[in-house]
Length: 375
Image (cartoon, rainbow, N blue to C red):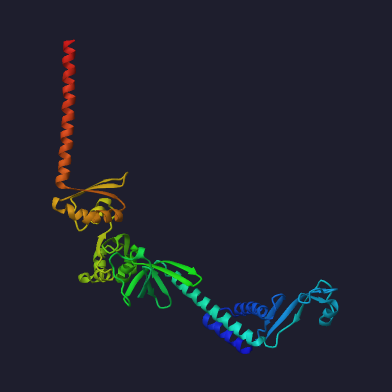
């Protein structure tokens, strides 16, 4: 050990941001273990490193007694006085016991500790960096598959795309570049573990923020997103500036902006809807591309009955009810969709029921009058 070690630690402190004092204390603790492993486990020892020249010294810590029983842990008062005349019985004395060949062991131990601490520091830096990127998009290269997990190289570290966060029917091929959404960053003994997603609605939101400057600068706001990954997404947008069309801003000239997002999502369809504070208008828009004739809302139950033309019913409901399901999730309202003919039939039935009920009451009144006349 020498002054070169101290110079190396100073350089590490500047370049890696690792506190030199913390490193020296870690080396001293490791040297105690190394000494005991090589020169005796029974001793109580202390290791010090000179902060100026890097010199290492080992001291045995012993208790001063009149009649020492264990020479490894105790020292006689007579011998203690030779070190320091002020020492008395029951005092603790430090006696240098640095072995002649300890320098090589110390150098190896110091190297191991420094390498380990550098690795830990780098892991800590990576962890902090990606912790700040939680709920954000990262771009990486697909490396391999491990037990259905897709491992993605992010440059400084790797991320895991678990099966539950993979888009159905999407192929993940080696060396493909892919954008993912960070959902969790965990600290582990092997370094930071980063879990990413291709199914999270936040991925769509971040993609729109990247592609649409008006969303990035806050002019256009994303109010709500409902998504069925790999199939269809509905996104409700609102413009704070009356001169800016929020839907047009998201679509872009000739659809270039939204098309870039569709391409990134491997062909997933995207419906962009203008958000409105008027529930009827908002619900009507949410069922796009279907056209809506009327919307009757129930504020208490937060439900809506929607009427569409007969030829638009299947479009409004969507394949396996997808369009209606996404609209309900987007708006937060329960939506019941009926065609014009279904609504007409319902009204006619209600009128028949009402008319029948009215006739029954009239007949009952006539019967009562006849009974009174008989009596």
